[in-house]
Length: 280
Image (cartoon, rainbow, N blue to C red):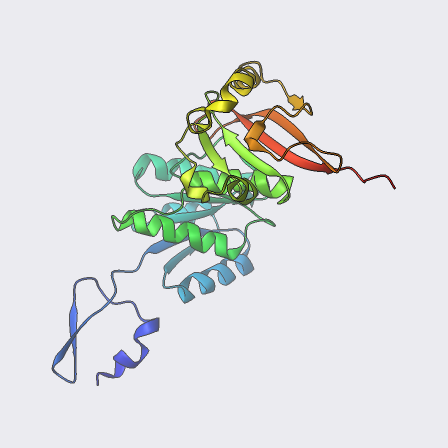
């Protein structure tokens, strides 16, 4: 046996090459590794992220300044950029340069707050303190699949809108729609309530799938989006086919405007159960 074959799981070989074991059996090895640029002014963060990404099979190029990062842009496949670099510098400066020179390279921005001046469907924005290392790996796997011409399972919208779901809470039924009722995102609570997988919703229209809602809610959603107003409804008018109002439970429904990933104004629609204790 070739001595290197024993550590095949930790070594990435050039794509398309075939190696032989015992001189007879062909062994097709994995594709070229993805090269990731890591930009962060904190050396400990760079060291930790680089070690984690290497463990997951990525080649990493690290930079602590905009100048260092700029020299690496020609050879990378994905960029992971810290937003606040200190000394009045920001990772989005590198993102803008990269977008001009190599628009096909996806970008992940890491920051403590959502930055609306940069990013879109082709990019991802992960929040420090809320996004986990698993979120970063999932984002990289998604972009890696796109790089290799394979189906992309997760896109930036899911990451962007999931932060809203996280902030509101898992016990709330949450939908994000455009002004005409097309679903952009639903959380797990909504998917369970409507007995559909989450990935079934994006791209479909609420009022086409549930026409009984159109009479009451179509104009409400359009008004919230157009006038950027907030709507609160406790009258129970059939939204989401919720369980009937009774003595023990009542639904609190809230709709408020949101700038969507495509810069259009959409609607965040939430429903929460308010408990009413039964009197003895």
